[in-house]
Amino acid sequence: MTFIRDTWIIFARAMGLSLRQPLWVLIGLLQPILYLTLFGPLLQTVAATSGFQGDAWQVFVPGLLVQLGIFGGLFVGFGIIAEWRSGVIERQLVSPASRAAIIAGRTLRDVVVIVVQASVLVGAAYFMGLRVPVGALLIGLVLVALLGAAFSFISNAIGIATKSEDALAPMVNTLALPILLLSGILLPMTLAPAWLQVLSNFNPFKHIVEALRAVFRGDFGDPIVGIGLVLAVVLVVLGAWMGSRVLAAQTK
Image (tube, rainbow, N blue to C red):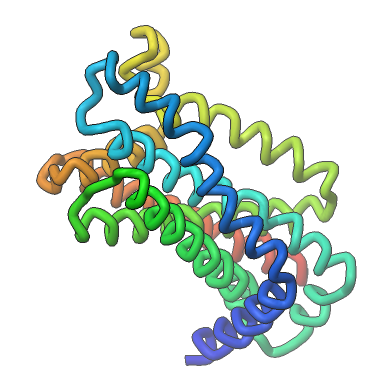
């Protein structure tokens, strides 16, 4: 109960700070719509000649949702660096608050923001032609929330460990590039040469993307769906462990 109470207190404070900056909230909401508007028409042309399973939107929107979950959580570490520099984290560490709650509350805020953005993305895609079962949309939001939580934990942990934007930025970019290129987020890996497809099989995010695309096609019984959900949960557990360990180390 103490952990839940402390997490809620940290979450409420973090969410209040986000709502006091509505411009950044609006920019975050507009980003997925820009992806749909600017990249969607290109993918429709590719889909017409490449033999995708499902229509263009059933291929493109799941990739965008996974991208939103990953990158929406990956850059939050810059905020915790600013809070560390201003002394907020230090004051929280000397309080009776649970160490895990200090990072879990912030992660919960990040998940709420990402899920709202994902909902706007799906709503905009619906008006552009996306048609999928309601259950597929719910699974999509769950996967986005899990990925957002995992990468929020990881980014906050890196931010606390480095305490420097100059160190965090190249680490984030180094992590993001192979994820983006080898997961088939924007284009399915079936379009890649054989050696690149083999290499991408070692990328867990490829399987998560494929799981969500199978769900959007209505193929809920595909084994890849279960694999994708399990991988997402494992990432959350690893991210939470990493975040808690790094934060606990600051008090030693």
